[in-house]
Length: 344
Image 1 (cartoon, rainbow, N blue to C red):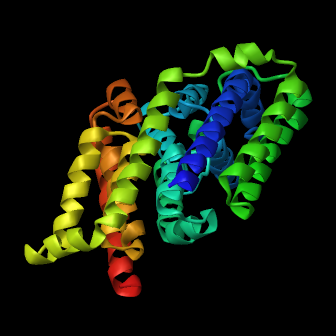
Image 2 (image 1 turned 180 degrees about the vertical axis):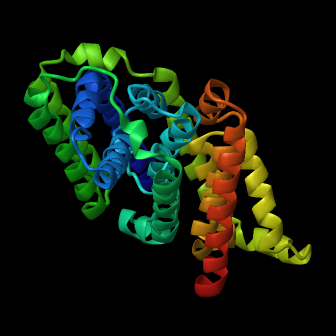
């Protein structure tokens, strides 16, 4: 119990560091966007699509709250079909829930289920592959390369490219190290070093970065983590009693799935759906974790309380809901078929 509470504080410090790094990237966003636009110039039709997909997926990884607004603003620099690009901006900013150690839902899953990060990735590899295939299909067949005509002047960007590529490399390296050293203490050390490097590099006052952190969000995350671990310990202690109750009323997995889906849909929060997934997994078994996670992930994407869904829905048009609904149905159905064919 003491070890679990200590790890909570490590994960909390880790989140604080991620938020401070995100503030530095928010300050640097304009330069990064110019670099990405520069990389899209003078490319052939097919190469431009590949580069476009790559740089926007990378930008979706950066620890920046409200990524979708930044991506959407960047997409508005193109002469484009705004409805289609709105869908694309959503796709390229929501893959990180399935793998990024910078995402609270992943942190809560690791902390509550005592998973190694590498194990989490192994469980998510099939959904990730399906996600990227869906994104590529949408980009290839629904986005015309002639829509990539840049409307803004991006001259004199050469001097920023090395600096921005350095920042990208630093983040990717930190994620790679997080996968190797799957320990909350090591995560704190890794991202403390990243934070200090960026702070010194850009000569940003520490107080400026620290004061921009959303204290309400960090405290709510801490509360969810503490509750998740406390409930986890209670479930472990009473697991046999819970299983006896489930067996007595003849419940099975088909009853659990709609319950957790509805709960995740109602809450519309990544940290809360991760906690719901973890509780169901603790009761039913770890092998069901990836299935529960994907079901709750889809519920979260569809939830009207999800800020990104709300943003795209009202900025573009209501057809967006059909798009995301089709995406969630395809992802959940194909993965469920895979899960029941090869896992169980």
